[in-house]
Image: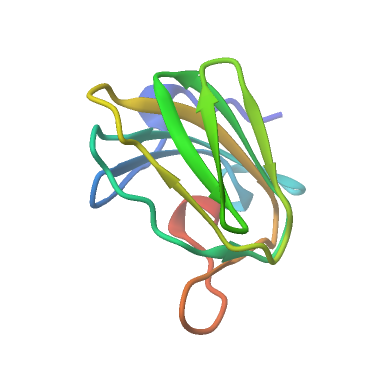
Length: 123
């Protein structure tokens, strides 16, 4: 068993997105990667795909997740399952930050315009 304390989790920032890496292979996980995100107010989504199913659970605030061209509201306590190889984006149009927990199987990769890659929080 590995215990990752919030204050020890690596932090990654990308535009209005802040990611706290929790479970990943570098931190002892062999099957599931988990991270906490904060999406700043008025942050546009970045359309991308993942090679494995990804799950988001809203913790605070509200976001819009666009999956295969359809918008869905995602609030605190809600969960969304993004199927593998499906174009999606997560945006925060509100005045408050949006926070969520996300999970992706180990080995899952993101795809934007080029070849699949591993975001640093899943390594």
